Length: 156
Length: 176
Image (cartoon, rainbow over all chains, first blue to last red; front, side, top):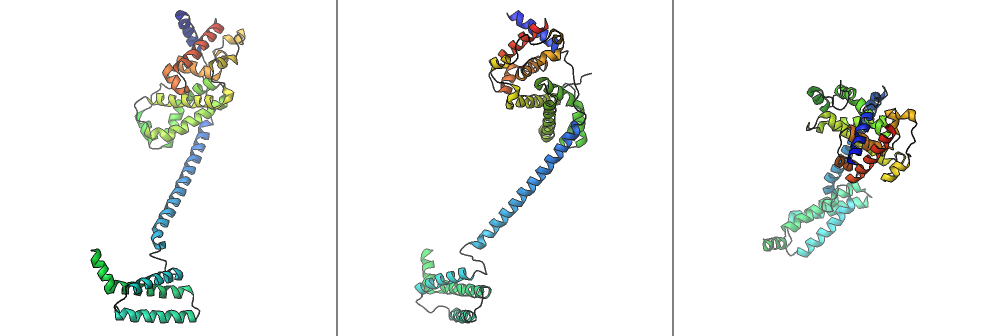
């Protein structure tokens, strides 16, 4: 049985060595080159898209801190107004001493400017910086108040 | 003169091809395209399908030659790609036949070859299904082991042994 299969294999191998050889179509290499060119162009395009998407993502990530509630954008009057209200509550809760007189005076001037702006029907581009200044003045008053310093010392 | 995968590739052409030199790629094609085409044609039996395999192999070669470390001769590396690509076509495409060894031979009945055709090696080979041809050609002509064939087909070694034994018996019977 083994001899039969070995003989079959030898016979068939001899026949297979007689197999003719053919040449591929002469234009095949040009088709391959064109396909290669298309593939490379598509790859470059994909890389461009990926780089663009990556750049957009990085820009978005870089801009994120500007959109955080703690650092509202300059032209967002509503955000600064809300922040100002929160700080005012915080300052009033701490207030036992009058605090820094110069800053209190600054706060009063800002309030007056805000009232004037609202009376004139000013838009957010004018209101937002005033609300921002008011928040900063309140933050300064909170930081310099006696209670806040006492809390800070206790925390240390 | 050796016109098959056994031809050597000089180090300079190989290095240029690794760097993406188009002329080096063309030189490699000129040297090995015929071997690739004939291997695919013997397995698939269709010139258009064989040319698709050659295109696939050379596109892949140009993409991956940078990673070719030279552990094996370049021709052997390319032959493996051509065999893989041809068998992928056989496995993917239903018209190239079923997996089951019985079905592989059921489609082509014994004694289907005319006596005149029996002297023609090509007609003999084409009397088998693509799957049986792949195993026969790769084992008998290209020196693949049953282990390698089993890996290529995703089957057991007994699968390729069974198909090879039946193919040999069949063709030997037709050749007498």
